[in-house]
Image (cartoon, rainbow over all chains, first blue to last red; front, side, top):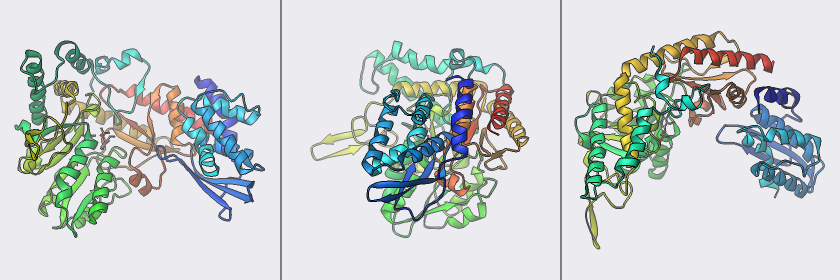
Length: 141
Length: 400
Ligand SMILES: Cc1ncc(COP(=O)(O)O)c(C=O)c1O
């Protein structure tokens, strides 16, 4: 990725999402609290899930992270609302696997995940992208 | 300032545009060191201490010559003060396990500081937990300088070791080790100096300073990975038990028991990193050719320049402002996470580190989750600083 491409990607997608993250707030009353933490870089988000049975009604998150991890977690939060635990875990698992295998995300015909697809090619930042997704996958499996 | 030393480092032939500001993590290697390592494989390869044939005798001789060279490099005439290890981390763990563990009793304590690299923190924390003794941690002030009176108050007659770094790999603080050693010795506590960041350009005369233990790594002083040094003072050499068991460290082995060689020959079980040792020897030659004083001056000038430039950027905040700073600057930028900084600088061929730098307790103390870090070496120049500042300015503007 060239510097210009990086700038375009940040300007168009990452910064708007990370500067205005979805439900970026502490929600202590949430039914489920999951920590997403990268011990290498220090990024740490609390994920808050309001649930009804196994249905995810609301996702919020709060913490410290780079623009990439924040944007990615924010997009994830939008995606997971309305899903069953299993569905959410499957989506997160498929997403994380696709990152690890460096495969394009064609399986997800979804514009927002397409953004993350572009993000994925972003050198050296896969850990930032997958931070929240991996935490959901591990905890809802 | 030193000129043209960049040409000594082939990595910059491969990447002429590279602006490498991460020498605190690992330094690049000069051609002479690379040649020494390669030459061993091509002309000299054989195992040491075990053969009577020429190749092996020659390799053994060269390996042991480096032991003496390292001893002299740190101000000792006695090669046997020097054990070769995998690096600073292993050297410190050896002191923890092979020296300290067996002499800890309830009521004892170990003193260290909040600015330590995890390598000089976790080994003591683990010992303290296991032996139910106290780990005492000296604080730093807002400048990132140790608060000496408080450190002094932590050391008492039950202190079994005072372990501290010479230079903080995150703050760049240069500790006044003479003073710290004196404080420890007043209470009869031995010291361990983590010299990982200072060995390259500070005169560390172990005899004059009366240092008991000192640890450093080859790869931060232009040498190869996987080789490091543990210095142990004469009077403590007999107190160090083997760390790993295996061949090469024994006097005799029977089915009933084993007796071991003395330090340092009880440390290097198994086939050692012979080419690494020779590479380390070559790195010392290189450093001595240039001179520590020149290296220090060059890095000092660059760092001072960079600090001044960064002060002009209101969005940039440097972590700490130590009285005496080495070639390391940690910084944060308003609203921009260190990882994002590093990614953008990378696009301008500038290599900086982002994260916690293996100093989590220190970053917590400063209330930071991560910083970006620039560190300098002899192959850097003012134009590298200018490039860093230019990129930072551009990024800040872009982000707004
Ligand atoms: C101050 C300090 N101590 C210890 C270490 C650990 O050195 P090594 O990884 O070579 O064992 C480092 C390396 O980052 C360091 O900067």
